[in-house]
Length: 225
Image (spheres, rainbow, N blue to C red):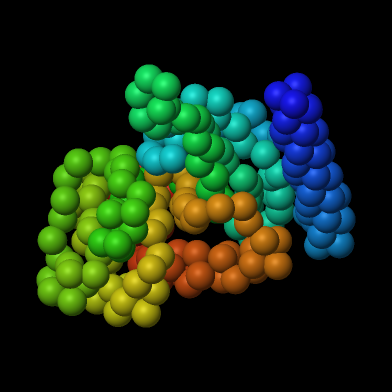
């Protein structure tokens, strides 16, 4: 009787694993077809992205991977959207278990190197803590300060990016957490991504980048920021 029970459990586990494999395969095929229709490229694995950046979720847990990367150009800005996942062990002893954390990352290449800036909604921090820098910055808008937490190693740069018009715009995007790190803008979201949402993500990121003052872009190009 026990043997039959064990066999049944193994059969169920095997069936679930097979169904998961089929679902992943169908998703990969759909992503590749979607990218091809848009004139973008698709890669099943993107190992160079696993440890490219410093902030969360990079560098966490074990078994880290970057997969299903769609890359292209949007309004003359190169971008990549991909699945990022890592594993971590929860609990101790016999009660411990391995949990897989999954995220969708969208990276827009800026073509210039930035000092770095993190803008996170307060609820985002509670749900997914992990900042690149440790210098919290308060700005002129109390509404903005209550809605977001800002940190950067360069206060002048942060203030120049987060001017009044930018803060007003971001207050319409209160759930959005993003950062400038190195030569890229990064948007982090929970779970695997839906390719039909790529355009919307890029539009939001462009709306932020377009509000960065031209003088600051020039300083970044000249290495003076």
